[in-house]
Image (cartoon, rainbow, N blue to C red):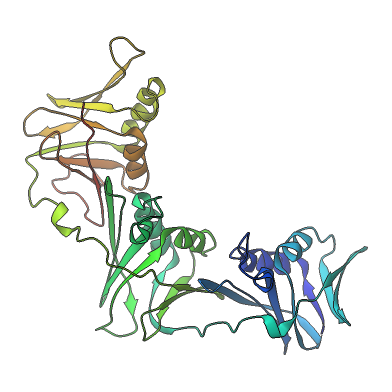
Length: 372
């Protein structure tokens, strides 16, 4: 193999492909990155059985070929190449990399040991990059950190024609976001779970200006994400997602509308006097909410904000981190807080104007109050 490639393009591509290489691979070959040069292009691939990553960049290919080298080391080298271009050439059992006045030699890994990459599944639809990023970030808020229940560490993806619904829950809170997309077929259906940490990694590299194309295999074992030429396949999580639809109330007798940023800032200030996410209390009465934290024999904080309140006065308490997490991913400037009692789950929705009669249901965040 003998090629020349733009150093910046090469560094970005290697860094993206190398992100899924496990820190402790089950076999040494999975620490490698596969480089395939052919007909003016360079394909970089990585694989760890649970997921794969591959992308193609332009290159001047004088001699085609395939090599496998240590991925993390290649990423470190590529990120520090001094020249505008880099030359890659194999000689015996080594890959020589030259850029500017710097040169490196990497030992080749045995190609016969590298596993076969999974085929990219059939396309089932596409959505614009920004919508995809926002939806994943919203759904990721409530994934569980407890690995003992794998289904709760994932995002539940439900597809019904043009509608996609993402849900997650850690049993203390529930996030649900809904958006429309362009399905490959009007009757496409899917009900799958994908690990939240993987989807976080996917959105970090998504080009918001380009579409994200989703694919799924017929066996329901594999999903793929394709954006700007970067393709990732992911093994789906097995198991049944909890039935959470019943957790959303049909009616909420008490509702309050506040400026979202003002509320977040007040919560942050009140939380300064709490320890280990002790409860923040919100007392709604007479079109005001009093936000307080701390107890009589400890440090205390208190602040009041204006709100539009309908229904009886009520006091509810929340974990301040959970509360801010949900508020932070509401895109609208105002938040509608919908309540039943001080102990039942509270729903948070965004809305564009303070005096709007209804809130947006594109994102729904449920949070269980703390006892106080």
